[in-house]
Amino acid sequence: MISLRRIRSSWAKIQYKVGDLTLPFFQELFRLNPKLEKLFKDDVSKVRALGLQLKMLDKVIEKAPDLSELTPALHQLGVKHAKYGVKFSDYDLVKQALMHAYTQVLGNEFDSETRRSWENGFDIVADIMKRGVAVSVYARLVFVTSSVAEETDVTAWMKACKNLPADIADCQASFEGQERDEANHWLERVSSRISEDH
Ligand code: HEM
Figure 1 (cartoon, rainbow, N blue to C red):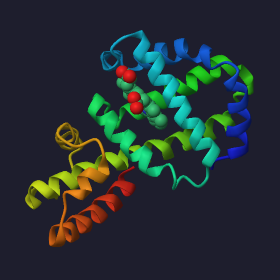
Figure 2 (figure 1 turned 135 degrees about the horizontal axis):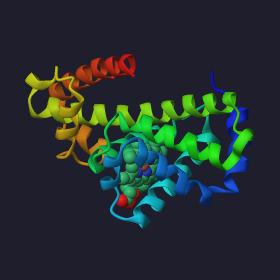
Figure 3 (figure 1 turned 135 degrees about the vertical axis):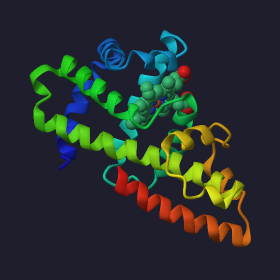
């Protein structure tokens, strides 16, 4: 269950204190997995990443529950993250770190029901970003050779992703005629499998 009302009212309070989120967020994230620190070039890049994440979440909250307009941007953002070296499992850690930072900033006002709504909402955004990676990588894999289209290993997606154009539309534009039909067929199968997995 997601209460948009709870998300929006807690978000309004967090807006006044966004600067206070940075320290607890990164302390918790690197406590959960110290290896994640190497994804960020320096402190400026950390502040930038969290700031832009919150900006994107702000847009999501504004549009929710209809995220269709933001979906292409979120797909591309997922691909960009895969290229930074972000793994699918890292999204859960970022979610936990964000919830920790909200608790530090809002205290008791961040009650368990509000937290659950945020967690479920975050999962929806993360799933859209992950789906962007999967679709994009599969589009490339199917294009290169249809024999690898059965590949389901996330590590392989990540590896393959390094060679992808960042823009999914560019990936899909590489298909023509019968190849395009075949790719769409695979993408459909893959997408439904991904929504089952996540
Ligand atoms: C809901 C999930 C997330 C959202 C909405 C989000 C949003 C963003 C945005 C909008 C950017 C800026 C991209 C650009 O330069 O155009 C960014 C950068 C970045 N994000 Fe995320 N992010 C999410 C999850 C994650 C996760 C799970 C990680 C893993 C630790 C992560 C690590 C990074 C890094 C390393 C950068 C690049 C920072 C830099 O060097 O400039 N993000 N994020």
